Length: 294
Image: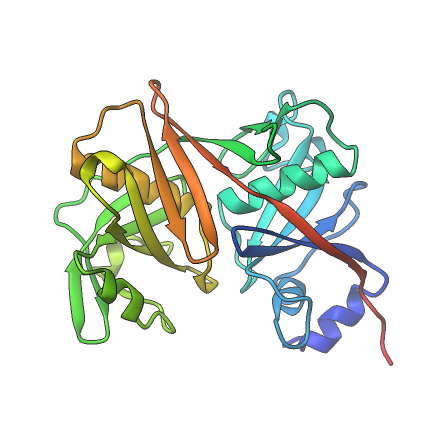
């Protein structure tokens, strides 16, 4: 098995950037010539917070037309967000990552104007750069899986019923009535979701608590992401919480929820056509060059 130091040595000389969206942080790897084949070991090495750059995930910036798995999106999106979780696994979509990805494209001059699209494994996503600097991503629609029974989520000796939502990543949302219970949750280890066959590819688990009255449409959440652990924010998770909250509140189809995450606040708006828009900040904080052996 390749060690982290060996994996980083293989990337010697590579220029990378660091960015975050409400505390959900990423290493961006510009691969404008589609010349880099990132391995799972290299992703883990970059994401390691002690011996690498440190991140929840890695975003490779690559021309859509050069990637067979998304080449059909090249007519609407020039750049593909090749997203990997911090453990090296591949994910369909990342809402916070998409905002950071879009911010990089604009700052690097790879996209101009205030609207364009990016390619993802979950489909092409429209991007809008807001006048205040926020970035809005069209996350597409959410689906709820046809389950014979509600999934049961367990943390330690506590268990709750959950609601399944795909955005398109799989999510299981748990509502907590007590705000102190949300704060006290130990998410060091992944919650157990049973039966496991409900989510064969793993699942992100969100714990949410309503803030204020139903009509306020505001929730607070924490999340444990598959392949990562607890993160300070999760864009698709915020969308899943919004969908589950709207169903619970019997909210109108076209509605918006403010979602407070440990790293800040995002707004999820469900449009009349069912599409979800995720709006929030996206910040690039540093750039670096990976060093070679010493």
